[in-house]
Length: 80
Image 1: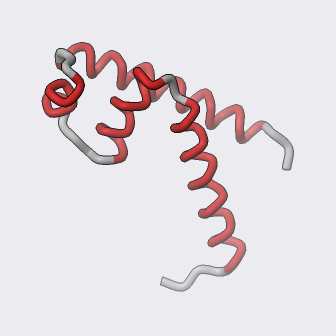
Image 2: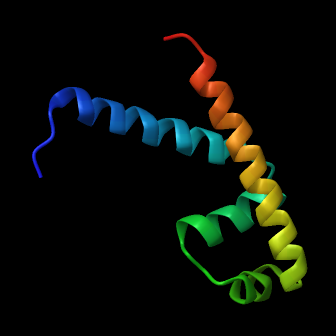
C-alpha cells in the first residue's frame, strides 16, 4: 500500500496521541485496557491475570474506554 508522507505523518501522530492517552490512564484501568484492547485477551483471561471477577474486568474496561474517549476528544480540541 502506498501512502503519501502527509498521511504517514498523521498516522504516526495519531499513534503517539493514543499511546500518550493510554499512559495517562490510572493503572487500575490501564492494565485492563491494554490486555483487552491492545493484546486482545478475553475478559476471563484478564480476570485470571489480574485476580478480578469478569464483572470487575467489564466494569473497569468500560470506564477505561470512557476515559480514553474523553482524553482523545480533548486532544482533538487542542489547536495545532
